[in-house]
Image 1 (cartoon, rainbow, N blue to C red):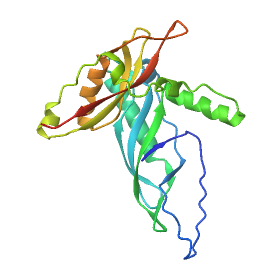
Image 2 (tube, rainbow, N blue to C red; image 1 turned 180 degrees about the horizontal axis):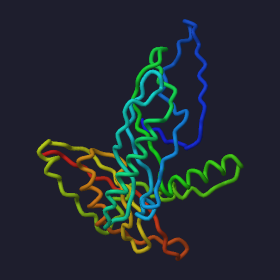
Image 3 (cartoon, rainbow, N blue to C red; image 1 turned 90 degrees about the vertical axis):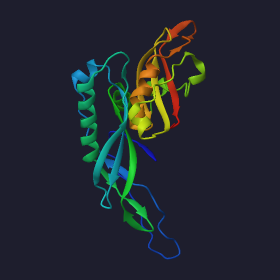
Image 4 (tube, rainbow, N blue to C red; image 1 turned 180 degrees about the vertical axis):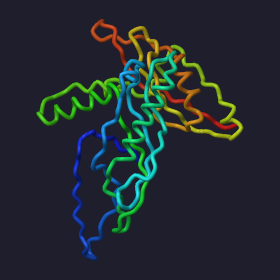
Length: 239
């Protein structure tokens, strides 16, 4: 289950019904509060944005006991901002570790659980704040983050879609699975940014590298070239 976060303090109230005729339904852990992610000027200059996905383990008291980054974010093709990515990953991980949840409920009792959490960073975070403020004021807002992924899976729309290399480490371990890569495509049809959003970690780098080499038909709206986005998927089958 993937839980999308809003960086505002939210309060969830659960009413427990202790009657034998109406047992308490099972529920997943729910976010109460999470600290803001520190996003440096270096990370912004490196073009890092999008969402970072974290697998969190939450105990029966609602405390996060473990948090591991499993995918994301996006950054420009042809660059390798290793230090900045590491800093952003660590900042997101620390925020999740210090988040507060209402615990999951199993058979009427608070229980430990695991959740995959999506944390917006960079421009995605700014767009999320705008959306929240618009909701407060009941004003319509253009959600650019949704526009970026509005095309969905676009493998079939590629002019060129190179296959990713099968990493030797994955081959020797017989790792298989599907990797999904989110793309931002510029006005010429070239992939400007890419970042994985799901799939085995050992297969993600090869998938992103292949996606950066893809090419798409340029998109125009009313004759004006547009920056668009979507996703491509790669299926790896162990030999």
